[in-house]
Length: 115
Image (tube, rainbow, N blue to C red; front, top):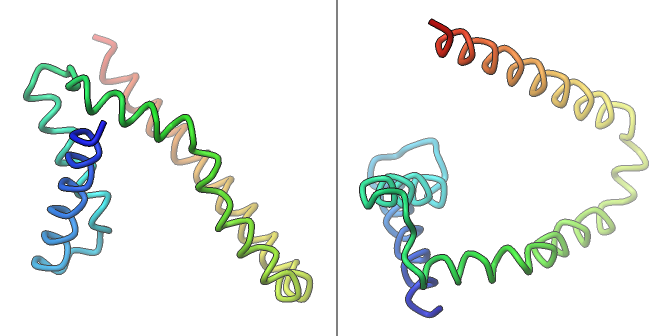
């Protein structure tokens, strides 16, 4: 499991270094995740056992990652109470836009699959 966590953290570190060195507008962990994805594809799509165990362990405790977000919401409750209307509108508009873009992208990709 230590080897798997080391692999994940090294990919994140490489992504962080690339993001800062190249001044990319993408977060380093996202670049690291893409690099890990590419490496796994080159290996035939099969993850090493240690990496799979580490990923399963992280996914099993994924709920703990929402604790800081929940604390942030409670901390900013006065701001949320004061600005509930624009925040609600932004959340609704963002959600509808994401659903729409996802639908259009899915249709375009499905059209490419049909001969």
